Amino acid sequence: MEESKRPFLCAAAVQMVSTPRVADNLAMAERLLELAVDSGAKLVVLPEYFALISADAREKVRQRERFGAGPLQEWLARQAARLGIWLVGGTVPLEADVPDKVRNACLVHAPDGRCVARYDKIHLFGLRHGEEVYDEGETIEPGEAVVTVDIEGWTVGLSICYDLRFPELYRAMGLVDLIVLPAAFTWMTGRAHWEVLLRARAIENQCYVLAAAQGGRHEAGRRTWGDSLLVDPWGEVRVRLAEGEGVVRGTLQRARIDEIRARLPAWRHRREKEFIRSVFA
Image (cartoon, rainbow, N blue to C red; front, side, top):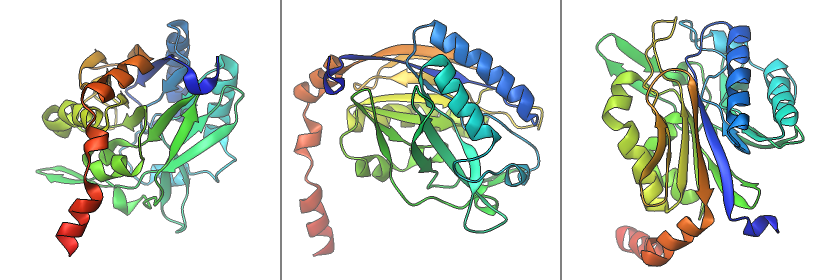
């Protein structure tokens, strides 16, 4: 069957509780990737910061790699080829234009190990809530480009964690079949907003959303929300994993997308140009 007409795609999200030790995290990720493949997944998504979560935010700067070369990228390529899967590699720290920062990059590797897409996180997380303070802008340089990639005839939009709060990013992707979101939501923000935002992105774009999260209490002291899940184009949660290490797996059905878009053709009902003219006239 032609790739453009493939009716199904079996996909999985890996949930982790990453440590400050890269070797331990890669061993954990390898084991979970194998579980995903054993379940039948052809596309697997790793979480944000899968290789490292440290109390020292600058540790990822010390681990950064030049695009196209480095142990983390080589590991991703090797796993994709070994398992014969499309691998959305969570995020890896790549060189930035400034020497003391990184690009938080999501790389996609094909089943032959080739890197076929790169998305650099555009929206950088910042939070001040009592003693809980985050400022990704201190160590991360934002990306600029919206990225989609064809995976076996499915148009897949790439995004990372905090991007989820910015619906205009997803509109800029055009009509996609699947949105993937490697993430490391905090426990506080995840409890309040995680599921509702993921379901909203699925509903308004009438596509599947697959989110791979960090989920638990980390050695560095941070607690992430977890709740890796697959949402269908009607906004229904199909599978989920609340907390801890594991895999969620589901089958994406093109017929489900077509059904929803035919039943409620919201994409065709958009009046974006008319709205922009009325606001700025």
